[in-house]
Length: 123
Image (cartoon, rainbow, N blue to C red; front, side):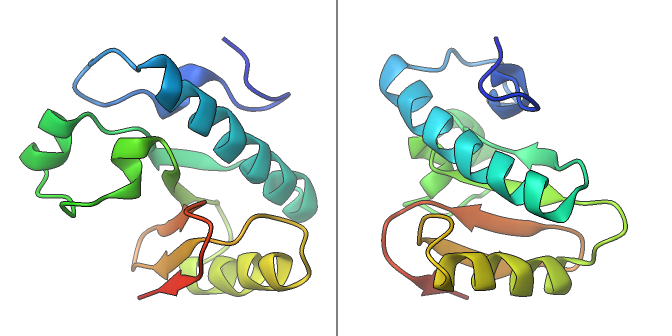
């Protein structure tokens, strides 16, 4: 199922195969729209390492207890040719300019976390 011109629902599915509830899909759609804007802005594909996580999967990988992934509001992403720290700066600028939704943002060595929790959170 297509969510945007470049993102499909399957890219956001929980890695344990758990069914995605409808209320989670609503959040995933909002998140996909933000990621589409970022993709169009940078002109490069975005790979989703982790989108929605079921409670069980989140526990298995020892994710944060209150993870935004469980709500379908977060994605861990990679863009070939752009380091996570560079991507952090780009997304921070888009948020500050009001182009995309405010939320959580964190750069890791191999990926970047972005979520649409509605309030600024950096770690």
